[in-house]
Length: 398
Image (cartoon, rainbow, N blue to C red; front, side, top):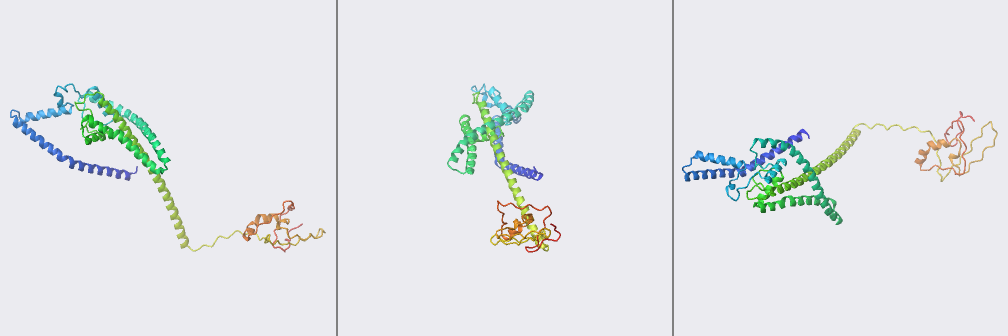
């Protein structure tokens, strides 16, 4: 991550923290001041009703009560019906151990002995990574099961010819709705019934727990009226599944953001390449217009070739004169259907160098008959004629 991005993110988080602090201060500070005034009124009322108790003795008594409550004591346990209640029975101790390795840490029960605190240090160092591995495995299996179930619904939507993009959106919404129904709404109603909380208090406890905030003002099973030893262990297994679901949701969101970032980078790279290409083209055109027109490069010189007649009007070429040393009668005139490629010592010249000229004139090279055998080339280098009626060069000997 770049330094500028990191600083911008840090500034955003700090701004978020300051805004949250201002909101919480505006909401909670008046309630705190009211509670403090009420406590002072109750204290003065108690001193007036009991003049034998001094103000100092009452302050010490209140301090001891506060320390006892912080240590896990509950004033309701003085009654005979709840005399056997303990905050460290097996179920409560199991739940406390679970809050350590899940890093929730409600704070309603705290360790008061040095041996317990020392053991908690090593217990947390080993248990937190172990629970992290378990949470990853359970989250993967739970997410796969939910996605497998939603896959059948996607198949039904595809059979109904629903667009694939809409199907992906619907599957993501169903994934969130099913998870919230199983791990948020259902436990909310269960806690409302078992703990006697309001719906707001129950959903507040659910969200604070599954986000591992764990204030400790509301804890399931902490009431002395709850006598079931299996209740808090069951709550811990719900915490395990709920945290696994939220971990799966966060993983899905992270993968989606990674894909979106990758696509965005690819698109930006394509746009950058197009912009660079366009800039180069415009620069080249501007430079070409600003500079004087350069002469075109000279074309490659081609040897002069005799023009070939079109097949529609074949030209009759006069026979070559016989060499003076050999007394042979002159060859008969070439029939009108003869082609220029039929003459000896001109085959290679026309084949190799006259194709461009013939294509420019729109005339195709005539082909020799298949059954006719062409005369072999002479051993000497052929000389290209300069015109249809000109004799051969003088340097050519028979």
